[in-house]
Length: 271
Length: 119
Image 1 (cartoon, each protein chain N blue to C red):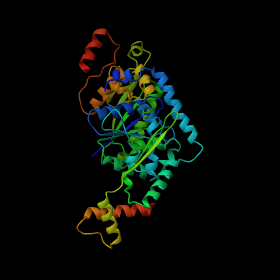
Image 2 (cartoon, rainbow over the protein chains, first blue to last red):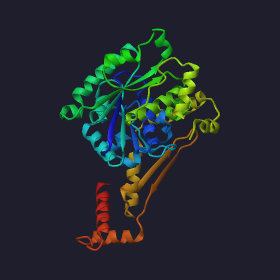
Image 3 (tube, rainbow over the protein chains, first blue to last red):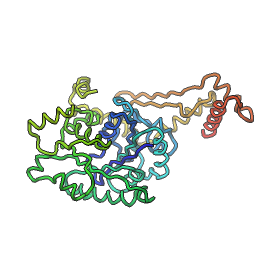
Image 4 (cartoon, rainbow over the protein chains, first blue to last red):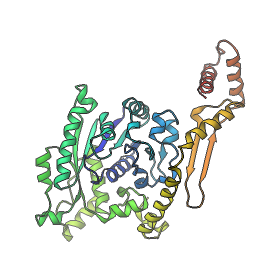
């Protein structure tokens, strides 16, 4: 039985798509057959971040509308075995996402995939609601910044009231925090919320802290999930987060300003 | 695969690659904005023509597209049934009930009939 994960945040621009691309790639790298779905109908970008934008023929909405078969819309990643992308439509709007249509596609994907990762659009409207409705697990992408933290809290409320699991009184959707764009030096200077501050406010378990990193922009420039940049802190932090998601006990790193000794010690550990 | 290989294959600065990728994808999107999404219709019409002559399985149709800067390629692969299967399918379709000794052929025929009806 496959597991459905939603990458969500409420607020836009915090790194949902970057994190979805990295996380899906990380799961596939560990041998799980994984598909990542773009729910941002009309504003698709997962294809660009994954580097498959030139190969999009049919999309999620075509499949929902019966205009194409699922296997025609799935794009197989050229780099990683077991990794597939289901792009969304760039021309239609969120109304194209019907609950029945989304359910049908997810059910079909469940037969084949170990993990289905839903990349949510920003907001709490239809697209975001559809992306989280069927989820078993939610990863809340948050920046250490007031508006992002507040919006994350809002989306946690939505998960607890409007997901399928909530509506049917099933075991709740698991919720884990992925704190992105974290700058330990600014935290030390007292200019940025600490990990612990955010955890105290949101009160959900910490999946990972992704440090602010120039590698993220470089990776999206070339259409490569940043987790494949194995020398970058962000890539390593995503890799750790995937490991934790799968139940491994991995210490958090990149949460304090880097000192030489510490850095080399950590690098050795990651090899 | 490591990042080093990736950059060795493409030594250009990543920002240059970003600009080129955007120019290509956006040129196609802007061009397509005026008209309807023709690919699903194109596919259905192509299949309808081919289905007039051959039994085809809708699940064995692969459409690939590569959008380039100067030209794009559209590749449609349709797997045609093997001769014996086609015969069995035809036989099953003409008879009231499919041949009992070949379950698979019966199913295939049903699938094909369904495909035709839909088109």
